[in-house]
Length: 274
Figure (cartoon, rainbow, N blue to C red):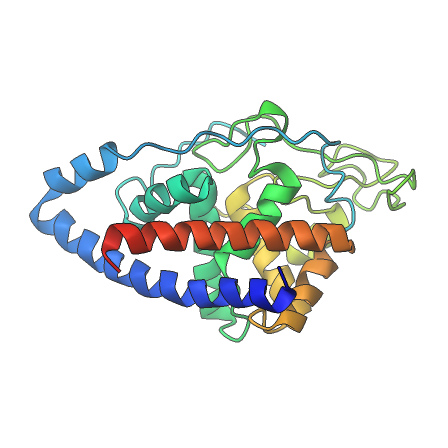
């Protein structure tokens, strides 16, 4: 698959998905007003996709080049159109619902704040998969609060084989290591990068790299800042390579983002009659 073709697929399907999502959201809002039992039955009958298997590589290894409290209840989206869409599309794309909510919310936020960036949620999802299987690496579970059941720390960035050497920059505050930095959280930010990219994606007043809502929005800001217009091949490549300077990483994210975009677009097209 060529870069232009893959990026074209992602961009084109982004437009299709957004248009159908708007129509689906409007329909769900109307249904919720006049036929709540019907909507509840529709959602309850959807079967969630199984969790992705754990990665068979050192935790954080692929996130080593860039930039909590588990149990906080978070049901703010349970009956929202976003939750309904995430259940609907997540099944088809094979993404945990809670992760898909975080990626889609980050896309919406960055579209309002930086409309010229044109970041699509599938790029964030591609990175989230490669970095930590959406917070599920090593058999973890992604909680309703958007945090992995066990915090994710990458390998020590001590200059070993295929590993950058980054001495401690935060006195171990985020990564627990006072000698070397380690990538942290489901999007694998190193402390120094988090210090400049930190974001509060869920509005709880805390900027926490272990929280996928916060990490996804921070990643969106970071990618847009580095890549400019991500609907172009040059912008998208520049953004993803700034996250991790590896052509293999770039291909993995591209392929995964294309797969997610294609799967969710096919699902929405098939089930909305489009």
